[in-house]
Length: 185
Image 1 (tube, rainbow, N blue to C red):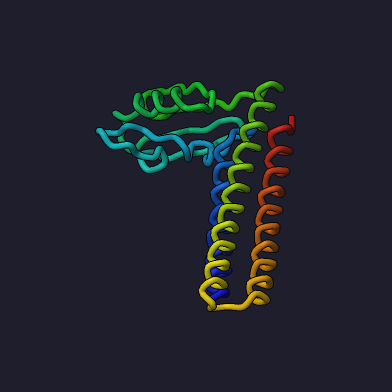
Image 2: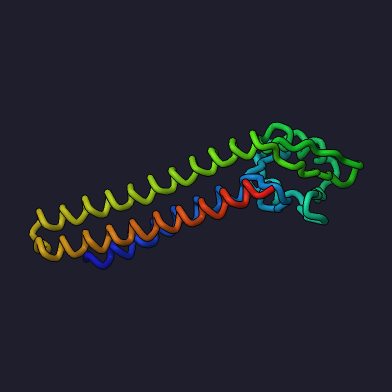
């Protein structure tokens, strides 16, 4: 029973770390990355569609993204979605292809992005701690129900705390890497 709780905790904590990593990928650094556009949604024929499902995103050079829509009539919609996003990029199109030049980041913008990354990291840590809280509560319920003893509960709590510390450490490592990537000139 306790093993099921810890396995569930590991799975949920892994998901929290992965979600944090995905959020980091969507944050712009000085280099072009197709993952930058993963958070962009386009209102395509009345349906909110992810950009990568209606267009091909390419990275022809380090400071340029290209977007080739499957349906050329959707170029204006894609441009509008990019302009309304928080990326701060200005698209230009030639009727068939959208080019997104990635400008160098100013020092002020770098600091704003670092704040945003730290916010995502804190959300990830909170998510991991919420999993720990839930599992601890479930363990207490087992003890109150008489299903396990106090010693088993204490060992399980220590194991869950170690899992929590490991996952938070992984999020902190991701944060350090992303901060270094953002601040790199």
